[in-house]
Image (cartoon, one colour):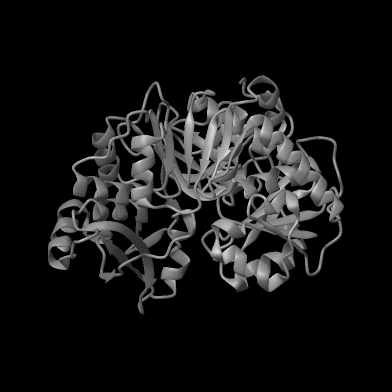
Length: 505
């Protein structure tokens, strides 16, 4: 479909229900499968049920979920009512869930009980009850404990909020990012176009729809083009390997840790057949060139890379099918997205110079919910979003991300960008994942500390790793200390949670 075919989230479902009514739209781990016609009907029933339970335009619907048809129905039903969908991974700690409930003030809460013991436990705690339109897909409803007032309604999809996504950023403090219907449809249209998505595609969706990439690009983008989406609640390398071999999966989008586990399984089995696979991409964390090369050798496909953040709905740049990157570039901006690199004084940096990544266009959020000062602080006077990320743009206009501004380590007056050091460490055959942080020293300097997760079945020899780092890194970039952990802390998306590691410094 052309990139601007639909004004409101969910319009694509009715479109394809008329034109390809018998084509499969969604499947999930409960064994359920819905054609586009069935999905459209189920969506109408869910919308009516929510309205009967009191959900009105401008209200918030909290969706405590893992990937399932019930989660997708809840999101689109809320959006059709012009309520705000607030998807939240059910595996968050109770304290985190209660903080989001208190901040967002939902009128109703949906829990995807059948695919998530954590969601079921939260529903039980909050007083869940059965409603047929949701119970048939393994979900329950709960009344919000302290619903807030409805937010103003707009008939403009550029102003009407469709989803409120909570993100911890690098600090661990949650912020509610308001994304409009136009934000999400902009990304759905352009990101699916970049993947050359067609109705014949079948996508394996394990990236959580409670995260902006899983919501906008994977869920919305797939249904935008009338393709099939297999919703999977949790990543399991063996389950994915079976699906790739047997189910005709054509597209897989993951995070580096997922690809690392697939490579480990491929080593054990002598390969992983994927006869229909045509497009793979990686996001959520810096892409190590060594990992990229091993994945590309496994399937003979380019591993595409991109850059985005919740506040940009999320995709800003992505590598191109017709010209895949041979290095760790995240590609050029999407069509109709403006990007610039700003120096510390706010001036545009020349090509090749590192500065803050700033973004302008229809992908930029409406703002942070109930935080006007925070919203204003991340916007420039001429409408660019200040990402807080550091990057450089080459002469072709392709973006290279070098790290978070807040994570920059200054050691003896030299700048150390953690992704560079992490990439070198992760290239060692014993290391699966590396996370690098700075630690203040008594003399006011900073030292580089590396947290390491070993590859399955391997033991990290720190002397050998130190020699590896010494051969590839300048002295000021080399870690002063190493911490080995069997598993580094990650979010449900697979993104490393560095703020939790900072507590261990």
